[in-house]
Image (cartoon, rainbow, N blue to C red; front, side):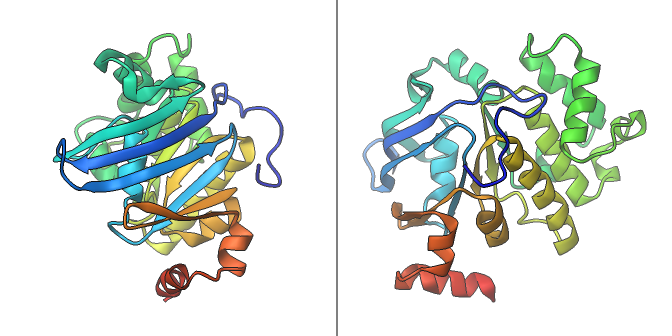
Length: 270
């Protein structure tokens, strides 16, 4: 676990779970060429894992497979995704819907597209709780709690706003708050800062670092190397649908000898 993680879970977060991925394979159609293959890794409870690589390297495909989902035209054709021993890929459609959000929650790349423009912030946060009844007996209290966890003002004025009345950084933090609302065991980020300007990136990175320090189990698909270096426990580098390297941040950044990865880091730096 990253230095500085306190023992135990953060207030309002669920019991942590170990995630194990074994021989994951995703293909184009049922029998077409593979997009990712031979993907195996484990994420102990409370660890922060960064998935990095060139565009098209397969990292987002792997991340979506952790939700039992494949983009149009793709199929998950092999492997296991075990969350505390339960294979998410073998769940019934109803079981998978129940697991999404309650066990593995997803923070999308573009919060403006993910949030409903016709609904107020408070309505969208309460709806997330209503999809998974039993998470809390005090919905209003839980909504205010997750706003604080996402570094947002826990005020009724903010809850009355519509997404277009928020900055990009606030929209992304609302998306994080909505994901946290269901007490997930694992939080999955998909390029959470790619659509933000530098100031807003800092806002979102601060929230993610807070979650890392709290002991939240997180997987982040990211080009934001500062987060991977400062908050991550390990980094997986993807190349052409395979894991090319798995390493702790210091080794990945400071002791990197692989020429393909060095070239990638040079491009990101510029």
